[in-house]
Structure formats: C-alpha cells, structure tokens
Length: 150
Image 1: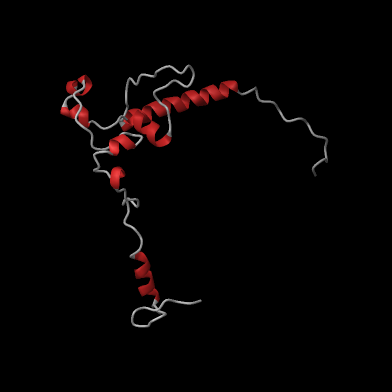
Image 2: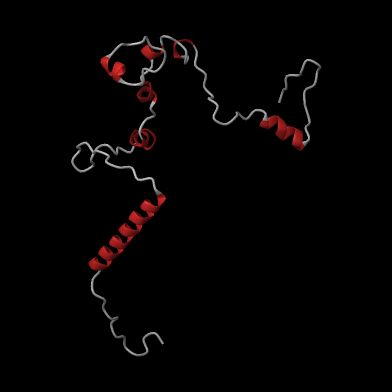
C-alpha cells in the first residue's frame, strides 16, 4: 500500500494508545450539534428559504392577517401543545377518535402525582375484578389411574 508522505517525508506515524484515542476523540462531534450545514436559499437566514422549503420556515415578510393581529405576544410565542408534540414525535393522533374519526376535545390534563396514582389504582382494581368475572368456574383435575406417574 502506497502512503502519501508528509512535507517532511514521514510516511508512517506510531502512536501510544492514549495519544491515538485522544486524536480519535477530537474527531467526534459535540452532542446536539447539527452535522448538516445549509447554504444559499436553504440557509436558516435566507430571505428565500420560506419559498423553497416544505414547512415554509424562514424569514418572511410580515403579514398583517387578522389572526396574527388578534394574538397577544404570549400567544404568538406559546409552545405547541402536548397533543401536537405526541403527533409530531411519535405519530400518535390523539386529537382524532380512532373509532369514528371525529374530533376529540381534551378536557383536562392531570399532572398531580397523587391523583394519577389514585386513578391508576382504581383502574387496576376495576380491571382485575372484570378479569376474574370473565374466568370460568374452577374445575377439579380429572382423576388419574393409580400408578400412571409413579
């Protein structure tokens, strides 16, 4: 195998194990750093990005629509709801009924651990009593002839 020599003529380098690992670690990217860089119209700061990307994200001209005028600054900056996050991340459609396809209205979000534990305990008791109601009556094992398994 031919190696291209360095400027000083060196063709091979021998590393101690710790030096070799430290050189490899320097090549690993930092966590949560984007590995893809976009340039031109796809760059994050491009004024044309909203016209060429499917999500229409990017710098846009300010629109004076009635919906945006009615919203307060807090409403404009509000993060997406947990239902929208579930749909986006896990593809779980929680806002549509799986039975009839109609809209589901979220009436409460329970976040108190004590209340959650109480509900889960009640559901566990209900499920176990329903499961035992569905079981058939117990039967005795059939009598076996003597000496069959002795």
